[in-house]
Image (cartoon, rainbow, N blue to C red; front, side, top):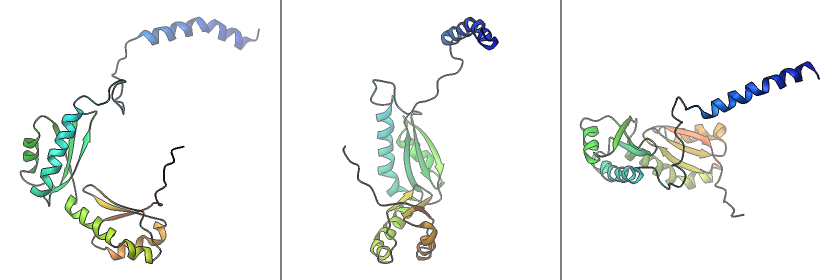
Length: 185
């Protein structure tokens, strides 16, 4: 029998014992968070509470703080509400008072939702303008609190033209093709 094979056969009982011991040992760290609830569970624990809190904030904040509010998001595994805003005196305390049963984390924003929504609307209004110039706009949407993203066929060639028309806007021009239908095959 070749020497390597003999060494491997001699080591097998030790490997098996190590594998059994490792399989039965208690983990020393908790398992990482997963992207879905536990099997058999259709929602995260407390999911409805966080979603309801997001609705409360998103319904009230845009009209109460139009120049500060930038958007809301949820982190269901962490059971928290993320509120994007331009720092404004009294804003954080008022939001926490609206949804006292939910943990709220605040993230600084550069631009309000109202401003970004206006930019998106202006660019969408110019859809035909860009179409006539051979630059179809495939996507236009705001990254809450930050910028407007515009998806076109050839950003390298056409980004300068779009930026020249909207010099006051913070734009990210990206490659984006027309939507593709999903087939039910």
